Length: 198
Ligand SMILES: O=c1nc[nH]c2c1ncn2[C@H]1C[C@H](O)[C@@H](COP(=O)(O)OP(=O)(O)OP(=O)(O)O)O1
Ligand SMILES: [Mg+2]
Figure 1 (tube, helix red, strand yellow):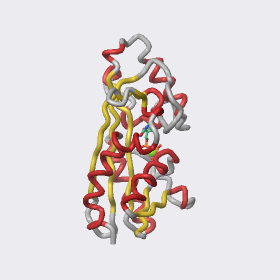
Figure 2 (cartoon, rainbow, N blue to C red):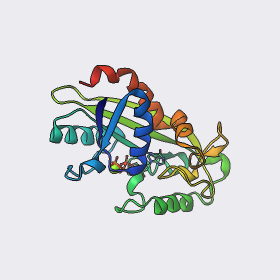
Figure 3 (cartoon, rainbow, N blue to C red):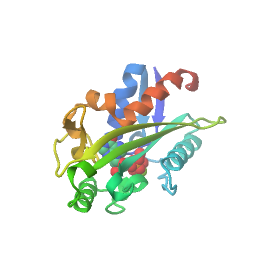
């Protein structure tokens, strides 16, 4: 089985990549398997810049094809915040609960019909001696008034998906992958993957 390295240290993402890649016939490894991996500073101002930075740094370090994911929540009533700063919205220590609290607090006077948002995911594929490619995916929803559900990670408990009449944190992993920003990006990537993996 082909092994693909995903340059993420996020356990929630790692789990999703595993359920998405296994049926495609790829085993995945993540930075959780590589404790000596460079801790890439996300200095970019776009998802694309950060995804490329993470993928290329780790691909160069280990001389293997590497996929990186940069993603985040874009809330319309907050002019696109937290956006590329989603992971560090409430501080550098990357605290999902504090991040959710900050979004709910900022939206406390915003009515239901103005709480529209979407998740964005950019995936970058870096290969030794080859041009880096990127794909993107999105997922539309609204921000709830409080947490609902316990599955998933990050902002999932406050992200309502109207088609499912549930939050992302109330979906199981396969249901989330079907509609999520990450699932949508990987669907695009899956078509190209056989030509990229050596
Ligand atoms: O499906 C998702 N469901 C809920 N929240 C999500 C999702 N996808 C991204 N998010 C949030 C989590 C984090 O606050 C930020 C990603 O930040 P991002 O820099 O891409 O990831 P990270 O620092 O956690 O791990 P890493 O850079 O090692 O991949 O957006
Ligand atoms: Mg990050």
